[in-house]
Image (tube, rainbow, N blue to C red; front, top):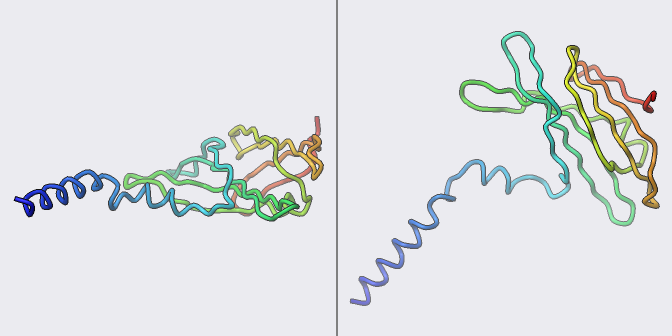
Length: 146
């Protein structure tokens, strides 16, 4: 009888655990680097018959002085799922040594506009910057004009 209980317990464990075993989405979420602290969809893009969403990724690393980096990704939606088609780092932002307090974005006919509110090392409100993304290799970044 004890073998039967062991078999039932083993089968119950396997059946309860099986929904998460082999789940690619769960595995992908677990694999996200700990430096990735913010991920958001910034809007949608279309290029001929290809299309998808812009994804904004903010990473933070470092000890006392935080190093913040900003990335724009082109997530392409196809009949078989979604893939990361392109990734571009906004290196000019990293050079400012500021942190991001908030991002707001809007899709436009020629790309994506992102407004970035920053904070400095002492935690005070910093300047606002704007990013206009036209393609994975073409963008404009600088202080906000308004």
